[in-house]
Length: 433
Ligand code: EPU
Image (cartoon, rainbow, N blue to C red; front, side):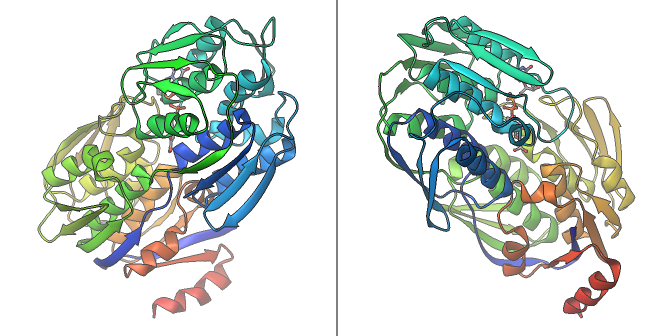
């Protein structure tokens, strides 16, 4: 087992390069199943969720070749039936995209219900509503999901989503690209990774219009050929580093980003007194004065992203005054707050709302990463705190952040990844001396 140790209190200076978007990659990788040819995909982030998904495809019979660190050739022509490996699917939330892709390709799908970070009930009723509307029978039993179509092909139709769901929008898109006729998704989610999935599918021969708006129209095609695609930069990874610099102070150029995707995050940081400067495909973040309190409410894109909620709450914990954060997407995404309070934060949670009374400083303490973004919040807290913070359960963080330790060390942070064996950890701590 490894953990992170962070010696906090140092401002950050330099440059950080952002990797490809996790939530685009975990949809585009299963989408290659729909393609009758080789997909060369660039800018794939090296994170454990991606490795796991590539292993799922390999287990099913795909040929996956590494071209270089971030580029893969994926050829799924060797996969002959719609059956996913149950145990592997259970360990990753995004494995539900395999169901949509298998159903779209083979007209049938069998796999495990998805796992992933736990922040309350995570239903997939809207995914199932879409598949059913397109003519599939879907049976969920004993942790398995089995879907079938009467004649081996889904039929295009209108699907109105009752909740704005990223997963349901992308899954219905995957199922629909090869369906007979036209599918229209109404009340669709608009996140950048939805547009990225549509662009990937279109570049392979699909016919999708309207991604990025609330109405997406998909005309089914017979074939999709191979091709080349480069995944967009990760909006949340970039936001996390912007928040880290906002917390520690200093000046960092965050490179390889699409600044437009970051506006929902940078607007809030600016309200808090952080300076943000757009420089082409990079954003400069600088904080010299104190952080100011503000209120935040999470919403689907282009609202403030729920995946940045723990990170901004951590900043507000050391901002001047009282702030309120309302979590409107997930029903249990404040579990990490008890960890921040151990570090001296003063946060009270009542249902969907956290009331944050800013404190002068955070103090180092042993804490846990409760989930991926909560783990990122602990890293930010550790960078801002006085003393050495030890973070356990970092496997959650490594599901979604490529080389976080190296990237932060590159801008001057004192952070190391150590074995959780205490003797060894103490020895490794000497690097801070
Ligand atoms: N919902 C339903 N029924 C459904 C689907 C969703 O009621 O069938 C509800 C959920 O309970 C939630 C809301 O709709 O309250 C939004 O859920 P959504 O489907 O949009 O979430 P998701 O697709 O399961 C993706 C990201 C999450 C991110 C959310 C919201 C992936 C693999 N995951 O999840 O990312 O929080 O969208 O933006 O893309 C993360 O990266 O840390 C992460 C958790």
